[in-house]
Length: 211
Image 1 (tube, rainbow, N blue to C red):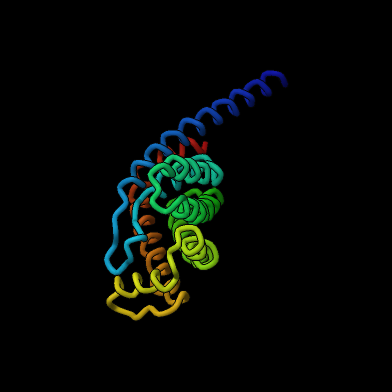
Image 2 (image 1 turned 60 degrees about the horizontal axis):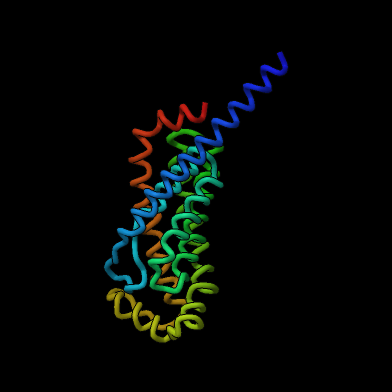
């Protein structure tokens, strides 16, 4: 009897692993396609591009746990590196910010697997994304653009100031607060809305996986 139970548990773990690998592969492919469809946004400098590639990673996190979502974020950026125009700085920054958004959201959803849980996970994920990217961009991305790409900070400030016709941007801190914060809030909210709308028809599928 004990052997039968252990065998069932092993089969269940094996099926779960196969499911995770298959879903991760599918979501990675979809995320990469969406990442290739990046677009510029009004009031934002040309080096900031918007896309929906975090949604597949988010659903991988919902279905298989936060680690699966982070794996999708890692793989999509790894695949995208040959197309990089930033000497991989943009891809590394995208991985960090996307992983924070997906990991935070999936953690909340794992504790509250319901529509309310989805809403809370997306709200928390957006807040975590916005706060974390302030530090990532201030201490990582912008300094690397200067050192690796020879893109001086005054030039970055000037690009952001010219793109934003509403407020004046004169310092590095202004770039963070007036450019990156609005960009990530907008990205988090719009990705969250689309993710929630996609969640509704996928709810039964996720519920079956949870059982």
